[in-house]
Image (cartoon, rainbow, N blue to C red; front, side, top):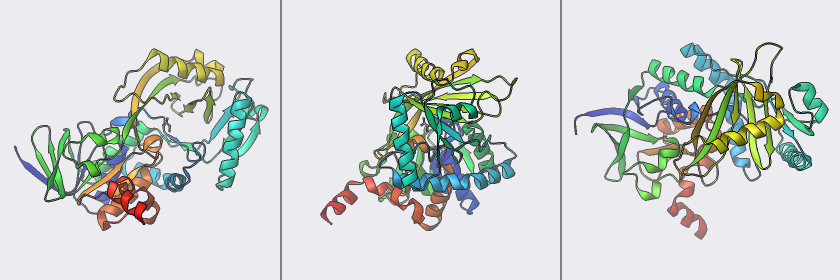
Length: 389
Ligand code: GLY
């Protein structure tokens, strides 16, 4: 082994979740390091950046809704602080979202979502097809109705990742631009990692924030290995004309033949169309079929889209968890914490994750709002205790 470097906190993974954890930990005075060959990379380079706590509400996910809303509420201050500290514009737009229905089945589905939103105390407004088209004239004439949600905003995840790298550097976070190869465990305590160039990085506490790769780090004992899996999402990027007013002025989304499609217009003129959801392991190939389905469904919503230049196609991996919610905070292995499993909500949950993880690193406890997301909910020992209670 070539050398040893020591910090209070070592974060494995420099995606947006690892970076926000490192930034907030460093702000609390903890000497913090991040190990990642390309900080700021990962799923944020693919994600559309919808902050869609209300339009992405699902039955059975009310606990997650609480965390999503807490994070959405923090976004204005979080974005302002990050911009103030780094000078980076994050592309944060409070432009709202319109979820539309193209046929009677879609409309019934949206009506159910509206009822669930109302039962959950969320703000959304039912619109007729004509009212939808008045808001967004590029929508197809066949749109049968929709839900207007002014509180679901957007951010540019690539800009967010760049700003977090800059904020970490400014806060004194040390970057090790290599892969973490193995967790080091000494006398039942995580003490650091060994990297692929043979360096030993020691730390008082280690945070595993490796996104979909989090379940693959060697040396992590089986009973604390996070149950995350990769869920592939393909996304395409187009460029909107600037000529005659906005092509789209807010995020537009729908379920078409059972698949979610969304169109996220940025102020820069970029239009992000996503996303497939595929359980194909580690495959990140962009396929003709994936791109075809996205463009076909998007075209049904906004027919004029086929005239736009297609500028990029990309696939990324969401870190899926068994209950679609993140795993945050201390594990059953002393010295090891998790910040992973954010699945479809990584960008939305970035502010609250940073706060919860910094609190856990500084105090040993998760704050109240994050306690339901303890990784211990998946550990065998906890499950057995709960069964016998
Ligand atoms: N939250 C959007 C997606 O995961 O595709």
